[in-house]
Structure formats: structure tokens, C-alpha cells
Length: 109
Image 1 (tube, rainbow, N blue to C red):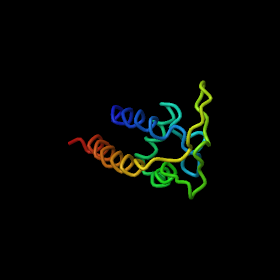
Image 2 (image 1 turned 30 degrees about the vertical axis):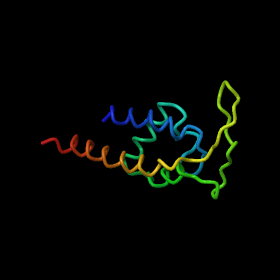
Image 3 (image 1 turned 45 degrees about the vertical axis):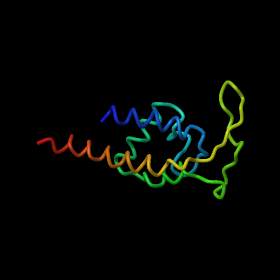
Image 4 (image 1 turned 120 degrees about the vertical axis):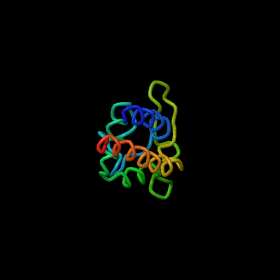
């Protein structure tokens, strides 16, 4: 389970690092560091508002993000704070795989 969470945390950091904060992705729960990404994914495994986090990770221009809304640390480059189209497959596949592993850990007959 830890390996799956770690792999998805790394991919999530690559895809959703600069996503605009909303109701699900906040200052404490985000993909900006590996530890906060792992905690956010573990929260998703418990079923606590994972669909809200998924909708925040797929934010579009219609919901208020901007193409130059975030600044890359140490370089000062401007980047987009919009979400990714990969948010839905990312979170649905994580929930399917993670729930399967978590269920096998609990049942373990």
C-alpha cells in the first residue's frame, strides 16, 4: 500500500503541483511536497471527499484559474495554476487500485 501511495504521490506532484487551491486542495492538503501528497492520497483512500479533490485538480479557466497564476520556485517563471485533464483517470485508478489493496490488507484470509 505504501508503494502505491508513493508512486501516485510522485505522479500527482508532477501533474498537480501548481493547481489553484480550492475546497479540496488547500494549503495543508496539496501536491506541493511528497509528504502532503501522500497524506492527501491516504485521505482519498478513506473516501473522505476524494471527488471534491478530483474536481479541484481538474479546475479549468471557467472556474477562475489563470495561465500565469503560479510562480515556479527558484526560477521565477510564471506557470499555469489550472488543473489537468488527467485528474479523473488519476484519481479513479488510484481509488480502484488502492481500495483493492486496502481491502486485501483488512480481509487477509
